[in-house]
Length: 386
Image (cartoon, rainbow, N blue to C red; front, side, top):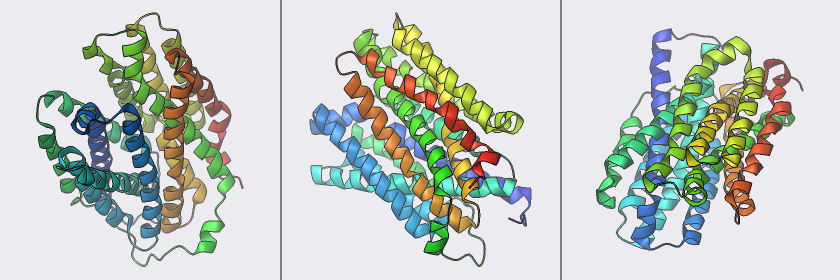
């Protein structure tokens, strides 16, 4: 793609897209950390909470498909703006709905909006990466993690505020929706179905399996980590959040350094080293004699696994090749691996560890090693093989 724009506007677009990632992380963690309050507000059982979470994941998958359809007809920037408005409205209803029906409407709006934002932020990010001509995806995903840390901090600071007032966090996505995102090139057209069919799906599938592995580990750590510290070690309630917080901090630091690491060593070696580190971290979690040792294990896991997702999107875009519109179509479909991995991570860890949660973490500990053979598909040469 010809670089007709100067570095100054590209930097502005990059900041806007990073704000989109950060906003998504901020609202997502802002909601999940308030799940206990939402559960109490509507007197939900554990099974009903699981049902709500499952519905959000499935709706997000639908939102990602919708993003693909819309991006074929209009700019991904417009899809992103629409998604941000949807998550703002949906999250506000989930936090401040006066009636159960309104809460369910909020779940629907947030779920669909989540999928749209998930797909379109990555569309924008890979388009910018192509214009820069170097790896920048990890830092975008680092922005998501930074937003998540801010969301967790806001929850801690407003722990005693009435749940309805916490809906004010949804002002942020409305503000960011007005940012100047990367526009579609003049003269762009919809992607013909034959062009999508001509995409080399086999290497994309191999990269997608790597992303499934990432989200299995990520979801297992973030969903079950606090429960693990609470039930297995009976850690003080004020410390159980440490299962997630150091994990996110380690992920943030490695993602911010990920751009330069990949440029210096290449994606394949970085992923393989990360897989070994993550496996070691989960081994520490599984065998930990005390909860501080388990926290160390989660921290190592976050550091090791963190760059898989951004490098997955980067590799998928490179393999797809062709126009921005063709890449957008691939990214929207590729984003479905996100939800497959999330579901597997939450379900398998819980099912295997239903009697002894230690055993549940053996699943991601073993499966993360699948990244060792899969890593070759992330490299430029392997990614271009047909």
